[in-house]
Image (cartoon, rainbow, N blue to C red; front, side, top):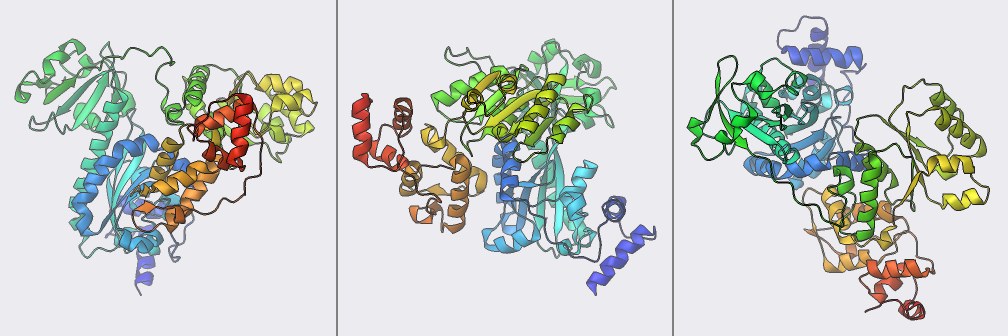
Length: 587
């Protein structure tokens, strides 16, 4: 009966006869039927992205997750006893972080209140996250406000999180599986998500603009230093280069972020950048009054730029975010990333070489993100590709631009190589990045790959080392566990030793799968060795040239036994080879 009544309500809205729904909900319902073709009579299950898609979404949102996590943990502590669930969704509507009671995990998963759920409106219908993304405003979608029958028990309140340029970056949602109170009873939840979203935006602005003046302001002085309402970041000339979303409402209501960013501070306030030192903590907060051009008064708190640290002689400066999070303390990889950062600012074609699963595509995306302009990233897997696809791109008259990433370029047949050569010869607007699992230079010398195409692709070559040779294994292991679990379980010494001793022919991709299984099997707060699945491939006995053997010993901290396990040989074999080559050894 409830299902029938719900369908009748939707029909009345579509006919323009409903008086019981607010305009936001009514418009969303109309979109669900008229634009998305959704059926109100069907109880659609939650839409969950695949594990690999979730990893990609979490990697792209990794910086925001790190900034938001402490604030979300504090928010969850405030509401934990009231059965609320917290979701952090990215701008596409996919849940990338989650806080909830693990005792109800199955119910939360089936309701979509969990990692990997896609709450975009075109899939989930009228819902908190989806409606927030569409409107850009904080919303409460309570029970039968939901378009989908499967979601009508839920009560969801969501608030947008904007980046420093005023673009929607994420959505913070606080939900109940079931609520016995009316919609008006969610006012507290609305205040909580709005406040938390504002604080995340503030933390993000402060993290992104450490080398800039930041002016924080509020309508009252009481919390101006500890919890201000809004802020702007300023360059040396006093122009606004970043803001929190609340700054728009305080500075110029109904304006857009684009209308404020780039404005000089003295065009909006009776204040210039030279006056900012007077608004630091040296004066009482109630005396730090700033006047807007329209006569309104606010209270301000200015934070001076942090001093620029002297660059270290051995590094090329601070790496862009995507490259900085690619690896931990591994000298060889850090040298490669420094080269990648410098090359990212050029149009030099790049060839990224490495075994399967080492993160070649992720490195390509990080290089693309480090370019000075924002342009498209177009990915083309080369295995089995139709050669005419390159002909289509060649004839597209400059509509692509940006970066063309060719995954597994060694898989191209002769016809596809010819088509690609024609494309890169004609399209000078494309930044080419290709990946290969093989020695492409050797294949070119052997006549298996066109040499003229090889030199078009390999302006510079970046080699991503296999996992077994990486010296930052512990850093990488801990980072992957944090990405996969809100609780961040401990890894027992026995499990860590086992993982560090494996050969990892599938590299990071194999490690990720191993951790997914271990997390599913682990009981309690620790992953133990018994939770680890066996390696999918038994290591075949392998030989290693001098350079590789020394690199392997370095990655294993000189431990001969661990190096032997990774190669699938006896310790005496490693010892004999090391002695023959005069390599350092221990253990």
